[in-house]
Length: 276
Image 1 (cartoon, rainbow, N blue to C red):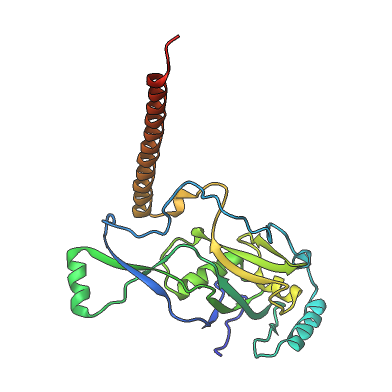
Image 2 (cartoon, helix red, strand yellow):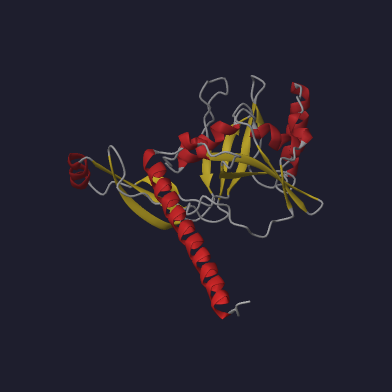
């Protein structure tokens, strides 16, 4: 494992190991410099679909121990206790400046595809695309339940973890589309809490210990009460507008058909009724 950069540097260093199979569901698109002609997206509806809720999932539950501020002596004790519990070489190590480094495991729970640049096939093809003013990129679904180990510092924020994951996979989507969650299991219940951008996942990992059921990390789409439209590219927004227009036309068609059917039934009732 390569040597980790000093934690005092402004830009944290990350060491990562891939722990999953390759992705499937490829879909290539061609885009011009100004706009996409077509864009693939997994979102097909703006209206929520009713479904059976998972009663075993509760959100916004917080593990209190993750907020504890520890002294240097407490950190050293916890590091020894943590390292004594693991059966691999994924140890945590103390630095001279008081910070520490270690590993976190992040699971991917993404419902939508991610976009990456299409690999260059050759200088000739690249030159032809450049002269034509066309770029290519590929959208694909990450494998279900894929996971990644990151070697980070106790000063690494949740936002930096997200950016590092996207950089590892050369994902060109806006990091604002994603959020890091802590996941825990207690009393047969699953609890999820969205981590603020400035929270430090490795500190949570140390306080909770190495047991993934006590605390784990999950990368999901950044689902908020309101959609952050500024996080989407122009082609995606245009595609959403096309979807919205199709849905509007479909809803209008259904309403017209419903009232037409009601009118026919009423007319049939009138025609079959006896005057007086």
